[in-house]
Length: 398
Ligand SMILES: *Cc1c(COP(=O)(O)O)cnc(C)c1O
Image 1 (cartoon, rainbow, N blue to C red):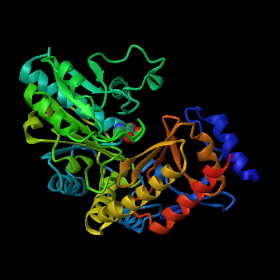
Image 2: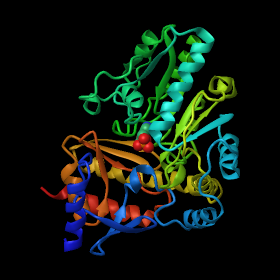
Image 3: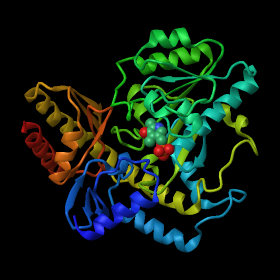
């Protein structure tokens, strides 16, 4: 580590809250699936900014849209119409179940909007007693107070009581528990079609269809948090498309801007009136700059074949990880779809992540034992081969 690297790290430690347990690594540049540190050391990046950089780092699609729009109009108030925001909304609506979009700046904010919309709609339609939101154990919906209240992981809620009222939890993949919990006080059921932070937990066959049927039966809204798994990551534009059902509300963020901060909450027309003028707002949500970039990103995902590519290389990657699972008895399971893949081990993953980093590969571990791979969707087979070979070397170590 050179002096400058130490300087960045020590300055950060001195001047910022230590909310992140950061790796001792200062990144300065990226290109495609590669990033470089201050010493010029190259890393293959299978974290991709946590499922954000779908088109990779320094994407010319992003640079071009950014440069063009930055010279046209960067920001005006949402008191006025702007073309990029409108066109992005049309693109999302035309390619989804949804009829209407609200733009914001992050996944948490998109989920806040979903929670507020569901509450307000149910309040108007059924009255204030119908306000409960059911979400899943081990879910992750964000770090604001409302989204934290909706998150089913005690460790990240610790110390923040009192959280918001009106949230309850059932186990993922358990229709009976949901059935019991879904009474007339429930306005919405909120879940990730595949749990990301929870350890790449995939739904059992028929589970999401069952959730949809229960929601329809009890007149509760179905909210899919696709912040992590949306935008092509599973090999379809939206993860729920694999399961033959649609939600009433869907939230997006992460890859939507390929690194520019943007979130979106999409919903069916029936909910439109519940979000009338003055009911919800944000200063930065959907600025011309960010939406122009996002529109270019989404257009590229849809038109340049990246979602099919993701499905093909994702299947290949999963197959190679399954080979590893056969070789090592401490690998419990390989899960996931497309390019969100998890390897659950029966031992902590931190040492594997560290060893991989030393060898020039960035990977992530969630829930302590699940190695998670969420690379750019543009990753190539050769890069996957390099990763798997190196992972095998690391796992071979005593
Ligand atoms: C990352 C994530 C969020 C929170 O998004 P932020 O942009 O960090 O607020 C919410 N839900 C899911 C499923 C996520 O993966």
